[in-house]
Length: 366
Figure 1 (cartoon, rainbow, N blue to C red):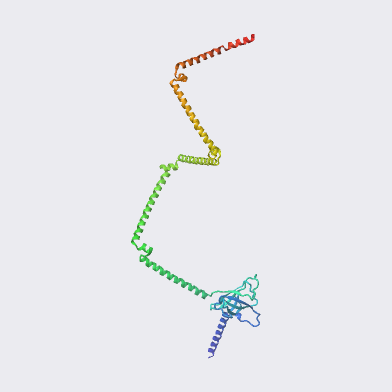
Figure 2 (figure 1 turned 90 degrees about the vertical axis):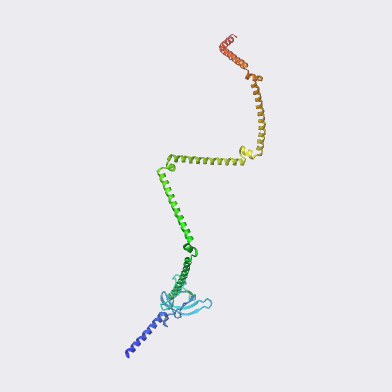
């Protein structure tokens, strides 16, 4: 009897110990404060929702319990939750501090984790609210992941259904794939196309062999193509021909430029042709010259006619000129006269020294 009482007592105190442990773990040791502890600082944190956070929950600073949730108020307009917390007066929050609701244990407890901010920032006024965030616990994340997996499974099932329907259509010969696989006419067309491709491949092989033969002959120096490629004299002649063509092209270009220059000068009225084309006075003078030239040509024509008439008369033996041309006696007389003059000049030339000497003598005696 006595032993049983001892066992019952041990179980009772063990249960109390477990309850105290969970109370401290879930509720936070920060709520166990003594009356002589220093005054706490009070702050307000705003959350979109608290996710099961309860009053008297602990507030952690850098993972250490340093405060407690005192009260919570839901804004009826915005739906935000204003959470009033107290912190140890030794904790100094900065203006860039932050707060978030996290899971304190695997049993579903919630707590507020405070990041005090940068020491270079000014100290946060207790009247300014802190904007907080909430982190999902592992169960919520798992539930959301399971929901996404369920959605993925549903999508996969729908996809399998669509694939099954497509396979049924293909087997029934519906659609392009079904027609290709099960329509005999399409199969025959595909076979014919395959044969055509095979024939084209054979033709391509033949062409390749022909090209290979031609290349081999060219490399060996057989045929005209080899001469064109390997004969240095022919290559030089081709180069010379190309050079001649280039020179001709250059000359043609030069002539074209000269023609453009001449045309430009004519258009500007420069030079004789430009004046003749653009100057009205010059044009009138040119017309007058042309008219006078016509008259002169007429006169020349008449002169030629007269000369032709004289030549005709001379040829017929008419007149003095005709006799000179046609009468041999007159020619002989003229020739004799010329010979006589020549003989006289010869005599004078032979008698010139005697005449000169006689003249000198006469001058001496005068």
